[in-house]
Every structure is written in structure tokens, then in C-alpha cells.
Length: 362
Image 1: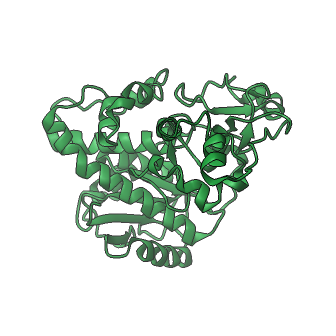
Image 2: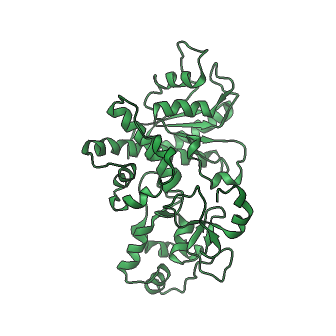
Image 3: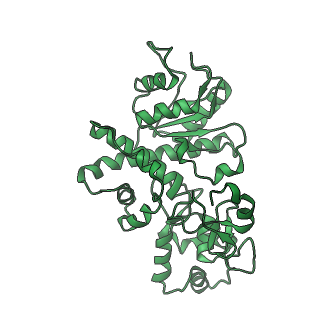
């Protein structure tokens, strides 16, 4: 794990700034430091655009080579001198120029769609305050460690010239080169993502590495790990293995699939992920026909099957990205434009699809 992580916090409410700083420092521990953006000296240029000023300030001590920016999405009451009316879009633009990833949050409750719709175009990772500041800080530190891990590994990969495409780079970074083609399916049809990775003319190797680190981290967090297909979350894994969520939560059941756990950047012990292909490998090694057959044979337990939330009489196998529940192929739709092609286990249950179809991009 890369050390010396640096997080910069943009927050316009003094009380929240103080509590968020404490929470971030608590979860970061000895791996680095957290700085409030309010602690800076600006030599000149207060009449310039906010993004220009932020870029200049973030290039100077103590902010240079920041690992991650954590920002309130509403910064109109900014405590930073001369930044009244600041918005997260200005922060994101300055961060993009400097190749610094951004995690943004809002004190107001977000619409439900923020949890499942694609958000790459916003230029930052969206974190939720729904579970409180401490959980938000924990997730932000996981993000910072993930970006730092990618940044630490990438220069060696570039020197080896072992990669010729973003998909191959990411697959190699994750020690899964055999998944390159499947990784590529998470980018097909989305040229905006790939445009962000092209280095400017005359860019140094360090600039290129920082830009690639940011791009690959965003892609991994907000696409590959979020939409079940190549990697699966708890509910999607249980559905795919045909095991009820309750039975899959049992430690002895999960231990059978321990070898398939995802341990790469942004892995979260409280919200584990599994490599789908490695789940298949586990089942194959034990000569079982399915996940539930393996559990029943090895543990001698009559575990329940995964049921479709729309029609419990049917086996699930898939994951409703809106309801976050197991769903069957017959009772769901997958023709949603913002779902990556590689996310072939992510679907929308027919009741929700019928309700949201006009604006799902279907």
C-alpha cells in the first residue's frame, strides 16, 4: 500500500469542516495527511477565474501532489478567503488540469437515481452522506488509498511498455491480464472516457502517469466495480451463484468462495466484491454444476436458492441496478444505454423499467 497520501478538503461550513477533518484523519491513520483548503496563501490574482486560482494554489505547498480532493458540492459559503460563491465544478476543472481525482458529496439528500445512473461526465466520484460523516470519510480514504495504489504501480508498468490500451493497462495493474477483453467492454461506446486519457502534446512522463492514474481510477471505481459483470457485489454474487442472500451471508458459505475475492484498488472489507470468473473457477475445481450445488455438497446444508424479487417462483441469476435485488432474465431488461456492455449481470427489473423507461436512455 502506498503511503504519504495527501487529501485536501473543500468545505464551506466551519463546523462540518472540523468534523470532516477529524473523520478523515481517523480513517487515514498514519498513511498520510489531510489539509483544509482554507489553509493557503495566495500571492496574487484574486480577480482571476476560480479554477485558475485553485490550480495555482494547488500547485504550491502544502497542496502540491495531492492524492485526492474531497469537496462539498455546494461551496457557496466557502470559508476560503476571496472564494465566495465557489462551486464544485470549478474545483473539478482545476483538479482535471492537475490530474487530481475528486470525491464530492452533498449535505442534501440526493435523488435515488444518483445511486445507479452513470456519472462519469461530472468529473468526480459521488459519495453519499446518507450514512453519516464517518462513513463518508471511510469511503473517501478507501478512494484515496486506491488512487495512491494505482499511481504507485503505473510508472513501472509504463516503463515496461507492457500495455497498449487502457483496458490492458487496467487488467495488468489488477494482475488479471486474462480479463483484458472483458475489461474493454466497459469502455465500448463511451468515447468521452477515452478522450480524457490522451496526453497533451509535449507532456512529461510524470504528467502522463498522473493523468492515466486518475483516468484508470475513475474508470475502475465508477464503472468496472460498480456495475456487476466482471466483478460482482454481495447481492449480485449470491444471485449469480443461485444462493439466497441470507445463506450467502454465512461465513462458512462465503469461505468456499474466498479465493475469488477482489483485493485490488478500492477494495472495501465492509462491502466485499468477487471476481465473477474466479467464482466459476472455484465451482469448476470442485466439479460442481453451480454455486448452490457446491455449498450443498461441501457443507451438507439445504441452503435456499436465489429468488427473483419480481417473481419469487423464478431463479434470479442477475442484479437489478435500481432495486439492488436479485432478478431473473425474464423479469428484467438490459437494453439501457448507460450500462457498460461488460456489465452483463446488471439489469433493470421490469416494474422499474416500465416506470423509468422514458428517461432511462433505453
